[in-house]
Length: 171
Image (cartoon, rainbow, N blue to C red):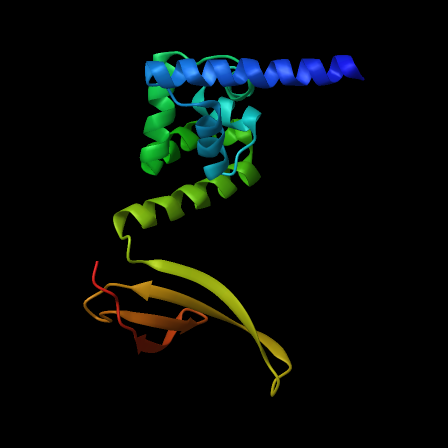
């Protein structure tokens, strides 16, 4: 029991020392690498495969091994440019499977939307209609389009139902 505690503390200290070295060298810390991977909803193995790296590469980078500059640059590019990540996804679509591809593709597409128009937000919500005893799906979107300046657009089954004006605080 004592041996396990010492080993666990030793691993934490080892990782802390390596993260301090990474910081000194201008490399991503292990938690930053993990955040990038999780941003796209991928497992360590699938993320490595998507990048064309060995299956255990991301596992090592997140747990103990310091990445080289080339891999660090790729991770930074993927974090900043979801379009590039989609290109990489398209190359390994068959290898990672449609389920994993679709999930990560959708997440990356949402990231692109956030970058291209930071004033756009959308989500789905279901409401229960007591008169029909059914759930109705509504799409809510915040758009900065000339057609609906500063409005929340409510769509029902893809058809615009209304646009509610809102005020946007000055930046």
